[in-house]
Image (cartoon, rainbow, N blue to C red; front, side, top):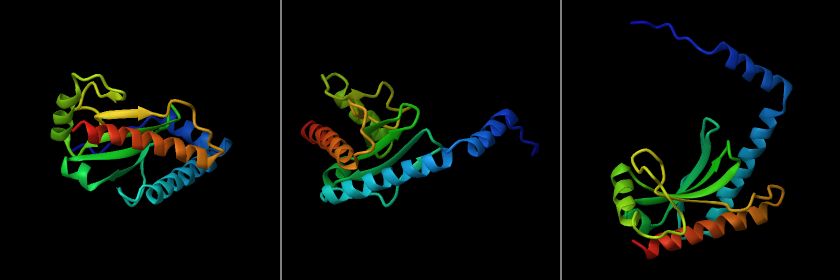
Length: 164
């Protein structure tokens, strides 16, 4: 068994340089503080939904937290507030509990005109429907950002519940 691993030393050195010459750590901590706050405040504003206990940080690709309601759970669905780091964009997703549910609801919605983006590949994406914030978020105004995310989540979830 070969236990030798090879890594891109150039990328690791670049990462080290970024950590030492920029405020990357402080910036990322501030983002996490903001995202945790959004999760806590949405849970307060949307008591009919059960929120997962924490946020998930996924290698600076996306960060997200999930929530569901008894009705969604019964149908094998959950929702998530997602932050796509590369695009610097908040989105709300509806996903299946597994790929079987993803494929089922994709089939239900694929031939309908939809006000939200339908995945093109339910077996390869982590969402069935997604809705990005249409306007760039004003990150200095937490209340306005929270209002935008809540409205988007409620609109998406109302659509889903009305079209099951």
